[in-house]
Length: 408
Image (tube, rainbow, N blue to C red):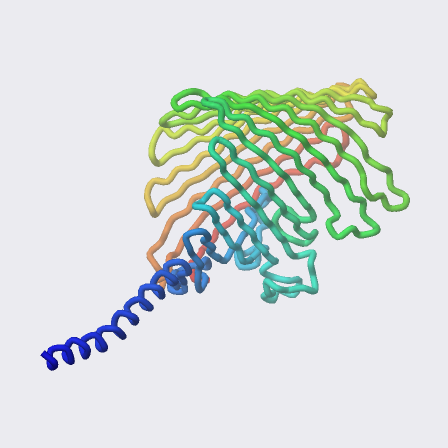
């Protein structure tokens, strides 16, 4: 009997530390579930970042960001090698709270190259003109969505430079109707240089859209904006105007095509001309048609008519363009674009016409030393005619042969 009691006491002493250790381990596992570090450094690409943070109430992830602005020039001889094209690099972060009901994101980016062509750091603090800071906060509460946005970029930043934008917005879902309201400000001359003016624009917008699956989407938007000079250097003229605009749009998406037709009416008062008015009507049709899985056609038609009360002149600007993209296989890609624009005023002071066209034939070759290789043939044509000013007409026809090795 005495021996049995001693054995039970010994077993109790042995099991007690095990139970305590198990409880501590369980608490540690719960703590690790609340704060987890996941290694993503093994991921390929520039978006790999060492870790992200997650918990039941907070999830934060980090990623590298990069941006290369597309080439806008139709003159192929103005193009530069991809390695010399301006690029930006930065670091972005995304966080969510309350099971996704509140989302925040931010980004800090800097030009990837400086004037000397050397790689610059993201934290380069001696030249804020090459830096961009962006923040956004979005919340959801039932049928209501709301948020604030902020972005500021220096004058030497490659993407939307010398501009600060801040906006707050809200959106209500009312069945098939969606009501959205926003208010924001935009200004230039971010660093407030004394020899450059700062122009600020305040915009208030409210709109309603009727959205239902398999139905066309109808939207109506009213906007009121005010533009004024908040800083005027010596010798420069102030700018101040107000405008009211109304836009109606109809959009529809089918199985092989989608289109959007919009019509706008804009009334502008120029306070520097004693409140003189200008009236603008604009119609735009944008569509995309995909008759085959390998072929996409995207036409665009627009017409803009502006009447100036102070001069009595009427300025008409029709525009038409179409782009084609054909991808026969993973090895063959053909793209083409053509456009026509004309601007003419009733007083004869403005009359210009512009024709642009561009085409590309790209073929993926066999890999070179294991790296994907592409051969492309490109051609471009531009013709601009000014019928009111002699000697300023331009015409350009150029071609380009490019061999691209992915590793270079």
